[in-house]
Image 1 (spheres, one colour):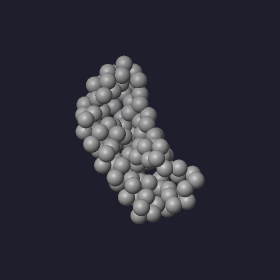
Image 2 (cartoon, helix red, strand yellow):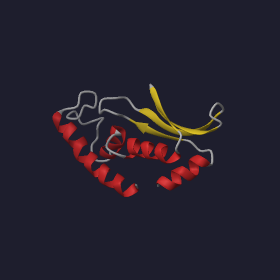
Image 3 (tube, one colour):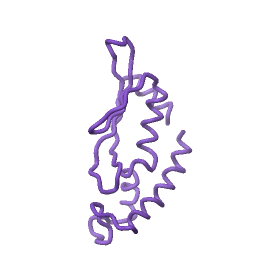
Length: 123
């Protein structure tokens, strides 16, 4: 996957993935894109999320950072999407995403461990 992202990024595509850093956060977009820096006279890569960004001169570092943030347990949005296939968050009163219970936090941690194992295989 890493090499595919690099290839697409170098061909002008950008990436945007739904992201949450905490269970009770709203979704935002985590983005990765390439721009031409006219001052440095070279391509640079940005990884952005609402309220901040990181700039990379090296595509490998940019892609690694993007993948780690979006495809690991750091992305609570990814975990929520996976759990949503098992739990009906809208109709199950036991699971309040705005005020997560210990049980819900534990479910996120368990699913997060699975996500991290899958992420290791992506690298």
